[in-house]
Image 1 (cartoon, rainbow, N blue to C red):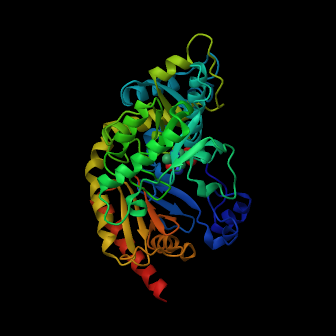
Image 2 (image 1 turned 180 degrees about the horizontal axis):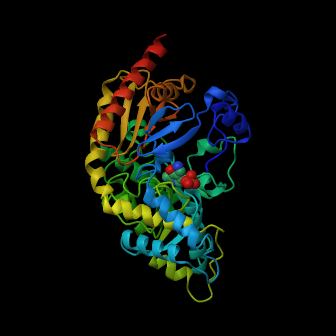
Image 3 (image 1 turned 90 degrees about the vertical axis):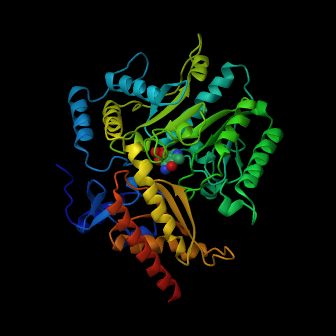
Length: 457
Ligand code: PMP
């Protein structure tokens, strides 16, 4: 049994009651502005008109092992047949949550051995902050609460996660955490470095910005620094080489906890289970992850904290006053276990080290097109920024919606890509082969050329 709605008209009529996320709701009142996805298999999805489309955004950066994996679906079904629901509140636990926590502790770097499950990346990030605030209260330093985040960041849509996100999102939506979060410079050289600046010089600018913030706010008032290894929703913004290691040294020297928001980057997307250590060579105090943890088959997040933090928040007299009804839901935990089994058995992170590089190089090749100003990212996490004049770096107007135009052309040609203002994001399933990648490259080249024609007209 699926849903009873069969035709596009049926679906879109009922859909008038659904509020889409991150959408121009007014524009979506037109039926032809919405796409109903009704099926998925492997690297493809099918829309309600019967079009088979390459899922170039992996659902939402999450369907890492591809769609329709029987093993995960069977694991979920079997779990629901045995134990449909029980909580991990109070003194209760269950086998799936216990096994997945143990597995994550074995995969996560160093002393990151304690796992708190939630149901979204936003909740993982909020949970990390709540735990650190409690940690500092336990240590008798109630003022050590402020958060260093970064311009360009995306950490989620709960009120606190949004406060840590780049401020643009909150202009008309407010933030519940005024004064709690300080945003450091966006670390993307294409936008922020002075002309002619080397990567190393730009890194020095970013380090200076961090050190100044710590000096001005006072390390004794700062709980943590939160950072995505590569910023995703901000437009796939990549910090200069050595950035995370330097930031790690500075946070450690100032007794500031480092939270790696690996909601997107973990579970193979950059060619490693966790990018912090294997790609960026540093061990944070907390890793937050979601999305690829179950490849999107079930909603699940994990906040993985160090033994050192755990020891303080679990000392005699401390109470863990935090929890969501669905923390470690049995079906989600079973999906996570089955998903990780596939990632390991097929060595998907290892494959991505090869195929992800082919993808990255294919996209970099599009840089020869007139309006492609910058191609950024790594492996299966890539972004294209469109620009009016490459030599002067003159941007298109926001209203030009060049990303939207390219995405529309791409969808008409069989590829889903994600528009973000005048940029385009690609975060496909991790099972693409060289032929699939060549098809994506050809569709994108064609779609960008068609957009250039539109802009001329
Ligand atoms: N952190 C990062 C880096 C993300 O990309 C996202 C979602 N795109 C989130 C947190 C929030 O995750 P969720 O949407 O599951 O709440």
